[in-house]
Length: 132
Image (cartoon, rainbow, N blue to C red):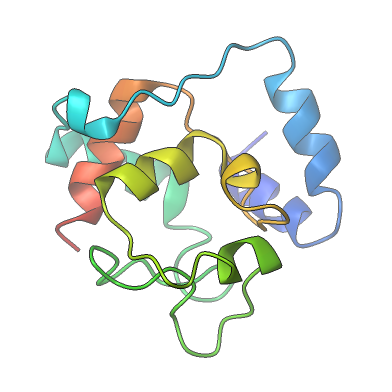
C-alpha cells in the first residue's frame, strides 16, 4: 500500500483496520532517537517518500518549524483528543521518536496511521525534521 493511500484511508475512517493489518506480527521498538545517530540527508529522502504527501498541509499539519513547537499547535488543524492532551509538551527528539514509532499508542485517536518501525529510519527522520 502506498503511503498516500494509507493517508487517504486514515481520513476515510478505516485507519484502525489498515494499521492493524499492516503491522500484524511485527515487533515494535521505541529505542530513543538520541541513542541512534540520525542521518539528516537520509531523513530528507524518507520525508520526501513517506511523509510529504500527507504533510503538505492539505491532509495533515505542516511539519515546517516542528522542532520545539508545541504539540497540537498548528492553527486551524483539528487534532485528536490524544494529541490535544499533550498540548503542554513540545516536539523534541524523544517525543518525535515515540510518536513515529507508534502514533496511535502515543496519542489515542491519532489520525496518523503510518508507523516508522525501524529505529534508524526514525532517527534519520527526526534529524531531518529538526532542520525544517
